[in-house]
Image 1 (cartoon, helix red, strand yellow):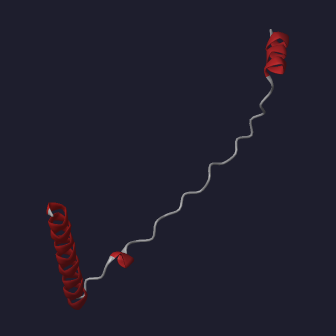
Image 2: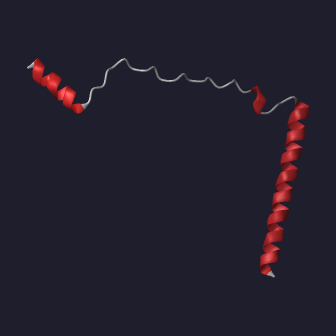
Image 3: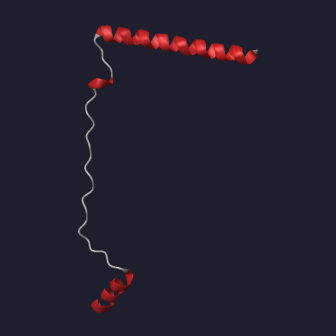
Length: 69
């Protein structure tokens, strides 16, 4: 019995919150305040530029180091 009562109390709270929210939205719309559509558009970032660095396998790299000495 207590479980059903708790569920109905929650549903009453939820419906009341929805009613308050919709009323606040109507008042804001009447006042001329609009929602998130007035936000500035998000700036998209470009992708990272590829590096022009050659990558050698370990054995070739060691051979180059050895040859340079």
